Amino acid sequence: MIAIDTALALQAPQLMTTPPLLTMAGVSRRYGDVVALQDVSATVYPGEVLGIVGESGSGKSTLLRMMNLEDTPDAGDYRLALPDLSGNLFDLDRFARRMLCATRIGIVYQNPHLGLLMKHTSSGNVAERLLIAGERSFATLRGRAREALGASEFPLERMDARPIELSGGMQQRVQLAKAIALEPALLLLDEPTTGLDVSVQALVLDTLKRLQRDRAITMVIVSHDLGVIRTMADRVMVMRRGRVVEQGLADQIFQDPQHEYTQQLVHAKL
Amino acid sequence: MTPVLEVQNLAKHFQMHHLGQRLHAFDGVTFTLHAGEFLLLRGPNGVGKSTLLRTLYRSYLPRAGHVWYHTTEGRIDLATAADVDIALLRRREIGFVTQFLIARPRVAAEDIVAEPLRRTGIVAGDALDEARRWLAEFGVKRDLWRAYPTTFSGGEQQKVNLARALILPQRLMLLDEPTASLDAGARAALIRRLADLKAAGVAMIGVFHHPGDVADLIDREIELTLQEVPEDVAV
Picture 1: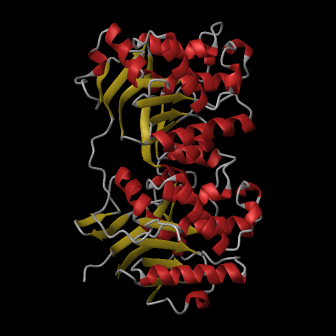
Picture 2: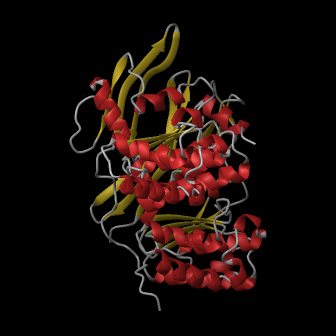
């Protein structure tokens, strides 16, 4: 008989008592006459996966770039509940932003050219992240790059191949390895499976799911593919024209969408 | 005795923007459920039995009313609780059992069944042993345990789904036609499991195509009746 206590739990309810890891409030950004983000607020709790959906130009990728501190909004507040970190992160200078992004935030872009140096080796791309964080020992760099590539299910016999020689699915794994090499508190995924064929897409989603379960990484995933969001996300935020039109539990957004635009999106899904 | 669930004047409608209509599902649903009680929802097709279950689970947003879930530390209204709290309650305390498989591509049957245990921190080996025990109990052939259920027949998928849904006892379980299209062996296994859960104090609300299957478990029944639909409103 297996010693698992699956007996009925009649204890206090497990309600969320820890504060959100990520809190964004009132973020707005215009590019000329174009409103990219208008008064956007978001919270993400530790270990949670937040999905962001919306059509092209809805602002979902812009919001993700804000979370990665690649741009500064016209207004807004952004906080991460991490040790030694306080205040509005948009107030940080370039150097502090770079350190924070290198050590605490990982990102995977839809376009691997944005995230990788195509003519360096795959292991070198991962090690670069560790170098920025101050690691100097070659053996340690190589060992940790190998570990991160392994966790991303990258074939290790190819770890010295250059990304430019790899398939799209493999390039995404190198990006993922780079993103998780320093065990970030927050993993940002911008259309991570768009452009991959469906079998490779399923493998990448599998890897993400496993990482989420084994390491409880907090994730924000942006995709226009509702199937991807449905597979990955605990909660979903729906964006349109730079605004959040609706948010809720993933199954509620897909089964009982409230906003007219969300209903159109859900009904348009094949 | 403190109840597990206290539902007061619960109402649901669906705002269909593309039709410019509001579809009425139900209103004024009121009942109380205690630990170890089994409540049967009755009524004709389309009356809103499954809709009521999904509204209690918060897959559907209630229009009005309260769903008080009582705990040792007070009560929480599931109708208005924060999404993040609903997600946590679903992980350990409130389960939903349906006939439809929630399968991810390229995940083996035994891993799908073990997942609820893994999420509570049980190590992989123990969780898999328990998962295999339940797959066997529901009559899933051993050579399918490592296979991907997305390619299984409807009946086999349903057995995997039930094993997953019932592997971890929860305080409140919502059952949406779990016996539909099951063979006799699996149906018997399911009813045995439900009886054990009831004896352990699990409160259950169920919709059954053939309520006779669970006649011995039923404590109370609620009859839902059809109401006028749809009601035209300005959108």
